[in-house]
Amino acid sequence: MANFLYQNDLPDGIGLGSTVAIDCETMGLNPRRDRLCLIQLSGGDGNCHLVQIGKGQTTAPNLCKLLQDPQITKLFHYGRFDIAAMLNAFGVLAAPVYCTKIASKLVRTYTDRHGLRTLLQDMVGVDISKYQQQSDWGAETLTNAQLDYAASDVLHLHKLRDAFDVMLAREGRTQMAQACFDFLPMRAQLDLAGWPDQDIFAHA
View 1 (cartoon, rainbow, N blue to C red):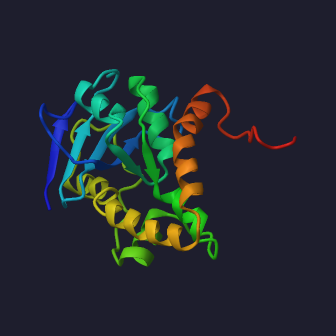
View 2 (view 1 turned 120 degrees about the vertical axis):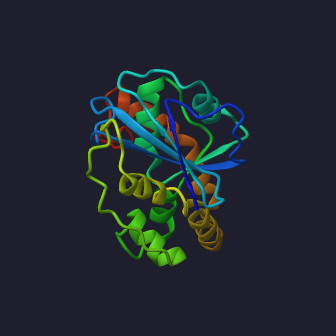
């Protein structure tokens, strides 16, 4: 396993396959207020490619091309936030997508624990540390501990997706999950447009 750190964008000519796991680190949990600092990507080969985003940066051509490529599935855990964060930063909407948190909520109805660390422990037997989760991602120089933490959020998502695909099929919820994944980019747009909490499908 290796981490590859880049500044501002992915390098030219890099290929990460037809399904790319993606996660973001930001200065906080409000995608409109808190700037995007780091994007980590993995093709499922054990390597992580990390892109450090500069303050005020609004373009990343190679990264944005990947996000919009209809032939590449973007794999997230809680994609709603990451999609919104990248849309707010670059004006580009990631699609098509797959979200392991949504998959978990559709089939792990026997528990209310859908965090990534719990899922990796329960589903693929991997334990990751969350110690660096609340560190300063806006720092000019990121520590090796920060990079290793960021990488851990994407390195195992392919295996997690495979495990959920089996469960979704077993429970007859594959089509339901796909419909949710298809709607997720719009859910992120609603968050940015001013409906982060209101359920527009509710009666009240």
